[in-house]
Length: 223
Image (cartoon, rainbow, N blue to C red):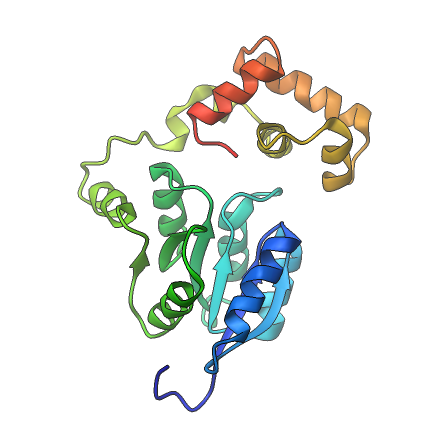
């Protein structure tokens, strides 16, 4: 609890409704914090953030339609002078995810293994100007900005570069174990279109089947 006269205004962005409900419940127990909105898709998140003007956005990294980075860029483009502080809250602790998200403008990055009280404290800290990271993740950022990072830049992976944005969305959902029908519903496209995208992804990544593709994606921390 700080000496602020107004509560910290928090906006939740995650494509899993159950997870958002859990975070909302955790933050509800904090007397100096209020959740002013939430969204499960990139476009909805950008619109909701601009409308509600939160202090801090808790941001999932991997979502369809460009994920957390697309939200960061969309808000910055629409309201560069009024952009809130972003704190990534992700299941991924991969160096490339951490570095890319921080470079896109996030103030901190914590994993979803974080406890409720620790998450609330992280929200307070980033809102008050600190940079916050889960243990060991700060090292990724320091190494990146000092030129010591062993993680290749995303554009150095020609197979990933060959995928269109929509194919990348399909790849992420396939890697999560979604069926073609579930992907079609999530992206609001036909199953036939999903099959076409999946076939293109297999061809471009030079994988023989879905199991091989899942392993290929896991090796690149795509999920």
